[in-house]
Amino acid sequence: MKKKRFWFILLGFVLLFLLINYFFPFSPLSIKKSIRYSGDQVLIDVYRSELKAFKLEYEPLLNQQRKNELIQDRTTNDVEYLLQMYELPWLVDKDSITITQKLLTDMDFEVNEAKDILINLTFQEEYSKSTKGYMQSLLTQTLSLEREIDQLKHHSSLHPRSTIDRQLRNLHVHFISNFKMLSTFYKEHLRSKQEA
Image (cartoon, rainbow, N blue to C red; front, side, top):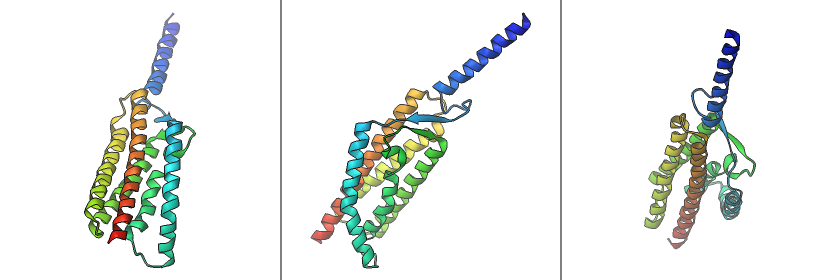
């Protein structure tokens, strides 16, 4: 009788442990701190086409600048490094991807690098008033991305799977919005350069 009760209690604990692992994927009790994320396919398609269109306009300018062997436009040069943040696999892949703490750390690293590039550009480049406004918005949005990733990394251990999934979807949309702001900033930069 005692053995049967022991096995029943042990089975109850194992079942509870498995439920916690499933419903709270980033909890301290979770064995594999990860969650499968599958982005909205329509959103990803639109984003990929916008990214491709931007690169089709941007890359000839970068290649032309490289041929001159002299950095004439630091902004054009640095956009290449900013684009790395927007091409992270979880943003552009149609397949579902496993989001782990390491992936969040990699995301945080890319956003931090982008933030540093933007800050350097802010202090090292002369921009028109309208371009400065877009740069300020871009930097503000990038700082917001950094906070969102930090929230996911450090404060989601007690969040249920549904909340984490919603946070990831919001983060995905904010990355796309941030890219659109980069595109707007860069186009305004080129326009104001031509007018000068």
